[in-house]
Image (cartoon, rainbow, N blue to C red; front, top):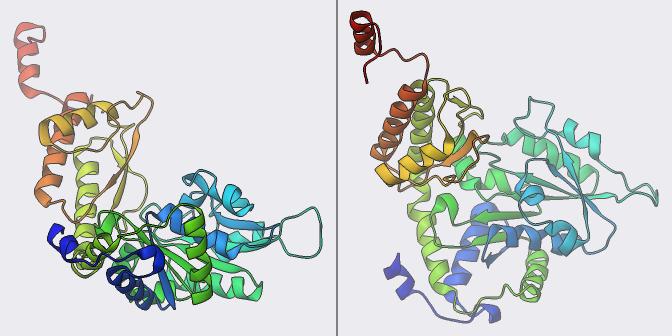
Length: 357
């Protein structure tokens, strides 16, 4: 990657003079079926720029999944940057897997002249969400609903690469229905930094202006763009193997964890683990993984009440790494589980009437 970065162009991206940045933006726009792209520092920035460039005149409200990143983890950016109200929607129609038109209809605010309300102007979806994939037919149904009601449709597609890999479809099929899409080139793709916003030329022109206003214009960004381009070509194709490894990890955790449960379906590269039934403390698991195996999952200082953790696999994780993880879990679960019976200890108890240490 460093070799690629050294060979990249060094033009000024603020003046749209960098060839490597222009190449990346055009590549991602083409892959997603959109007119133009804008390379930025983060997915939060590309999401917020999409909203700001779309919601120019308040009052406005946005519908999104109550679990979504744009609602929970972007520091209230929609309210701060776009003067918009957010109505988080509960996914109820299909047992919480993903939003449906029926879910959106419950919270949709019609622009009927009622001065008390902020009409729905934009719907934001996320794919993947907690590692699960929104089906293509649901995207198409929501697109029809948005078009019928004259509202814009945005996709936080930070991990859309994983979604396309899991479904086995062309990326464009999952993105062309949206007015704007944010695609992270870090995370699963493995680039050092960055995210690309795509949309029509007018939206990207406006977003570029706001990027500069927000202090997000970067000058010699060619090295970062070039390596992101390389990752699309070389890392993205490895995602299928990473997904298989994630399922292998999930199955192993439930098998070896003696009461540990995976509580969200493993459809891509994320494993959501609940240790409450295993007797394993999350903080202790984190410490032992790091000290004994060099595996970091964070949460070394997790309170005793915290039992759930998200594990995310990427292209540099091997089967040997996963087996090392499972070895630690097996050892800890064996020591913690009351169901574990030490045969040699039982023999000692029978012979001596007590448990020898």
